Amino acid sequence: MLAVLVGLAGAFVYGGADFIGGVASRRISPIRVTAIGGLAGLVLLLAMFPVIGGQWSSQAVLLGAISGATGAVAISLLYACLAIGPMSILSPLTALVSAVVPMLAGVLRGERLGVVAYIAIGVALVAVVLVGFVPEKGAVRPSPKSLLMAIAAGALIGVFLILIDLTPDDSGVIPLIMNRAVNAIIMFGAVGVVWLLRRSKRPAAGGWRPGIVLAIIGGIVDASANVILLLGLRLGELTIQSVLTALYPAGTIILAAVVLKERIAPVQIVGLVLALAAAVLLALA
Image 1 (cartoon, rainbow, N blue to C red):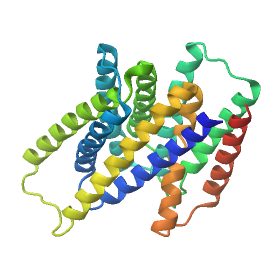
Image 2 (cartoon, helix red, strand yellow):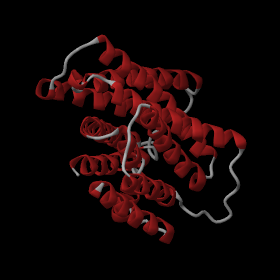
Image 3 (spheres, rainbow, N blue to C red):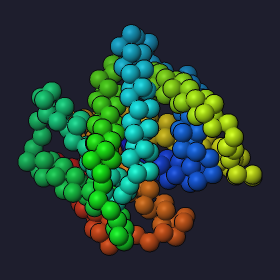
Image 4 (tube, rainbow, N blue to C red):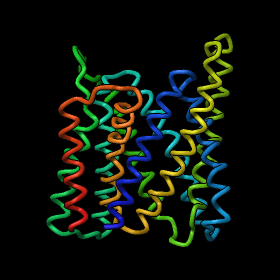
């Protein structure tokens, strides 16, 4: 029960981070938002280390670093495929793949769940697709390139979950610290390359400061979600946590409806209801 609640909380916090990052990306570029957010998250995790602690080991450092590189590539592919569109297909596809990859890994590692749990996972996967599906008038079919990018992004997000799950139980937040450090280095390097290639372009006057502030907040929220995810993986199975984490679009949608007054489509409401039903079933299982 506790693992399910933690998983749901993590999904909502991840959704909040995506919402804040999306708003920040309207003022400064997504790549800058990711870089600044990575650095802000690193600062938060370093501040949390004396409280949470963790045992330094080569396994914790290596897996954390690899997960940071994996996450950087995943985010880049995700933004790139969503820029091509249509988001209504590519977004839920990415979330679905990000759940299936670690779920299969958990099964291959010997995780065995009851019948009710597998039914709940099936319901949750349907909810992932419905929650992330936003009908677009006249939406074009996704190109093979965008589909491959979305699948690759989802697979790499799934690999990130697997890597964090493989870290030693006594490592605390050390893998997350390494994750953020490597992620920030890669993304700031990418920012530098883009700046050199496009030196003539500058953010709109007055728009970059709020964007930076939002990017910092988003990075802190995202790092907090990582800590919640780590706790969920320590408490429960990778199979269940990966599916619950994939429900992160629900948090984004709810915040967009409350803050930006965006309308929730009927199909998304169905998805949210199914997500709650799946959570109840997982708790009972």
